[in-house]
Image 1: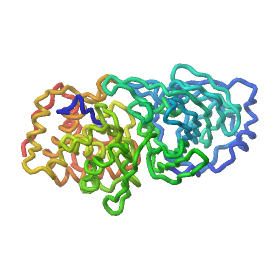
Image 2: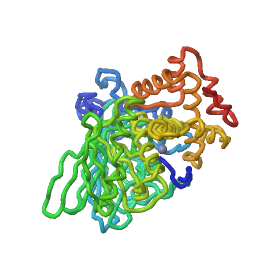
Image 3: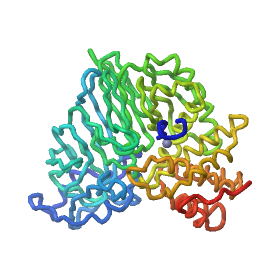
Image 4: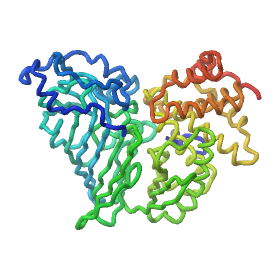
Length: 503
Ligand SMILES: [Zn+2]
C-alpha cells in the first residue's frame, strides 16, 4: 500500500490427509450426531498463527479415540482486528466462482474452500460482510448456518475431525457492501459503473468472498469469472483458460503460490491486457483500462528493469507473473495486489513520484506478499521495506540522489514508535518512513555487504511463509553474530528515532 495523498508530494498440495472424510466420520460413533457437541475454549485457533503448509504428521487422523468437537473461534487473536480470521482450521485453497455483469452491482457467486482442521470442530466461522447466503455445504452435505455481524457461523451435519481435510461451499449473491478505512476510504469490492475492482487491505476481502480473512492464513486461489463476452475479467496469477459460452465467457485464473486474502483481486470491465516479458523470461501482463492503454505502455516501461533491480537485492521474484492493473478513476493510494498491483490513472503521470509508487508496490511482492504478516501490528515489515526499496532504486538510477539526505529528512520528522499501531494508524507515515529508517540505520551499522546479505537471506528463508518482527531480528542477530535486540528496540520503539549512524 502506498498512500499518495498523505505521503510526500504524494497450492499448497492438498494431498495431506489422504483419507476419505466420510469414512472418518462414519467411524466416529463415540459422538452421536444427535448429541450437542461439547464446546470448549479454542486453545489453538485463537492464538496459533495457522500456516498453509501441510501438517507435519503423516499419520491419518485416528477414528478410535473419542472426539471432542469445539466451536471454532471467531478471530485469530490479532490485537488490531480481533474478529478477523477464525480459529480451528487452516485454509489450503479457495475456488471463487463469480457471475457478474458490468451494468449490475450484484454478483452471483460460490466460494469453495478446502481447509485442514486444527481441532475437532462442531462448528466454525467464516468472515463475511453483507451479501445473501443461500446455502452452505460441508463435505458435500448440507450444513446449517447463522449470521452474526461479519461472522458466518457454520455447523456441519457431522463434526470435523482434527487434521482432516474438509471442504466448504458457500453459495451467495447480492451487491457487495464496502467497509471503510480511515486512511484508504472504501475497502472491498468496488463498483464504479461499468467497472468493478477490489481494494482488499486490510479487511476488504470478506466483502466479496467468505474467508479466513487474516494474512496469517495464506492459501492457493482459483478464480472462475463469468462475464458477458467482450468484457474483460482478470484476477491474480496466470490465465489458465478462457471458456466461451453463448453470450458469456468464463475467465479462469490460477494463483498457485500462497496468497493472503487481502491480496486477492478481481477486476471486471473494459480493459486491455498488454503482455510482455521481464527478466529471464518472466511473463508480464498489464491490465489497463482501454481508454488509457497507449499512455500505460510508456508509464509501465521500466517494470522489467525494476524487477531486475529488486532481484539483485532480494533474490528471485517470488511469483509466476507480474503486472499493473490500472483503473480509469482516481484514488489516493496504490495497492500491492499479488502479481497484479492496483493503480489509479494518476500513475500514468511520468514523474518520479509515479516511478516510486510502481517500485514500492513491486517491492511488496517480496515484502508483504511472499513474506506475509503473522499479525497486522508488524506492518512496518511491509511498508518500511517497500519504502526503503524506493530509496534503493533512486540510489541506483538517479544521479545526484542522496539517500542519507532523504533518510535524515525522515528522521527530522521525529516519528513515534511503530510497533504498536492501531487500526487508525496502520498506514500512518511513521510506519513507512521510520520503517525505512530502521533499515537504513541497520545498513549504516553493519555495512553494505552484510546488510544486503541479510535482506537476501530474509527474503529467501521466509519465501511464501509468514513473518513477524522477532523473526527478522533473530535472523539479523545470526548474521551479525551478536544480539541486535537493543538496536531494534531503539529504532522501532524509542519515543523518537536515535541519531543516524554516520558512514
Ligand atoms: Zn506499501
